[in-house]
Image (cartoon, rainbow, N blue to C red; front, side, top):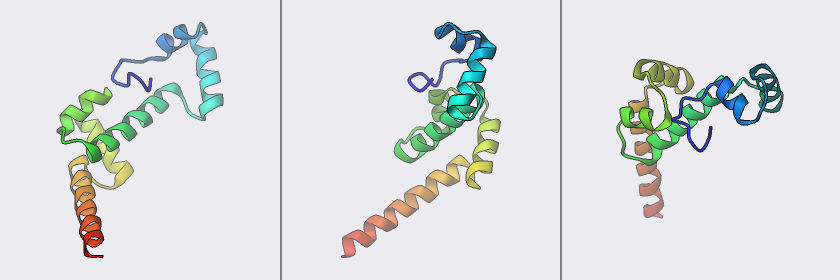
Length: 108
């Protein structure tokens, strides 16, 4: 999942990769990670999208595509719940904070 987050992963496909039934895979996965495979993938995609917003100049739509998220609306809503702002506002705030840190460093 981490190496190809944009792939359409589902529990039966993941279970087949490790020769387990979907229910056994879900059980073991949750036991190891504390979350379901679907939630784990969603959380991973959100963290990767957050990182890409901070480190690339890709548009929000391009970031969505790179991490395998399909719905711009769901992404924006989920991102706002997590960070209290839209992805675009998050990116602006990050870059403003970065510029302030750099300018303070250069003054000393």
